[in-house]
Length: 343
Image (cartoon, rainbow, N blue to C red; front, side, top):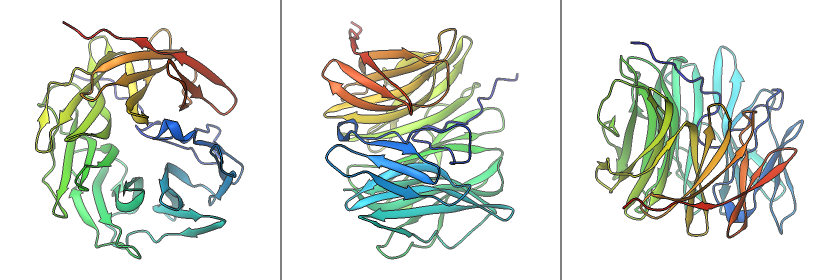
């Protein structure tokens, strides 16, 4: 049986298209209270934040940005740059008025390196995970730890498998270890896999949820007290549906009440003590939905805005009962509507 496969033009998390591309996405803030807004410019990114002078980050031609990460002092850009017959990781550190290239991890196993995710602890760079391989449909998950002035030897978290590995996401757990999730084709359909570090060593990759016969795609992950929460889109007869699972520090619990029909491309953000999940709303009335979650991962409130385009918005906090969806040329406020807990 064949299922529709979503074109992963927008991978869960913040995406900024290359400056030369006709599509230009904002880099979404992971902390909504910061007021962070990143705008594409002809030569790179302009970072704006209340109370601070705007910062211009220059990017090389053809660069594709996967994330803009706040550090203890300054910012870090993680992305890719083209090179002959492939691509290389792009890592830029911006501090004050200075900008410098960080070296990419040295050991390579393929011509293509894509989808880097920089994991920080206390706003300090700790680990980089990325996809690497000789073909776009045959990537391995790779990782290296930042030692302050260089990268540790590169490790293979998940080797090349029977098909594509996509939509890589990662977070730091409360104990400082790293948890990574991604989608992988298992020979029949896409499933969500995970691995974590323990004492600096990556665990053997395994499924987050029980094997099934339908595609599970585009995971995103965030830390919760005592563990983590992952959300992804699962194919159903009526279309893709957002689902979730909780990690208790040892195993995944399939009791997450997170459910949202007709949604794709989820990504987490935080606002004060709240956790917010942004996702694309599909169907006859396309747009974007924001879900406010409580500490257990249950949806406590939701709001949505109509938007026929696929340009991913940033989010910012406006007041207690509303959240702002921000695009390059406009913004729309959505008011929270409380969701009653099931009895």
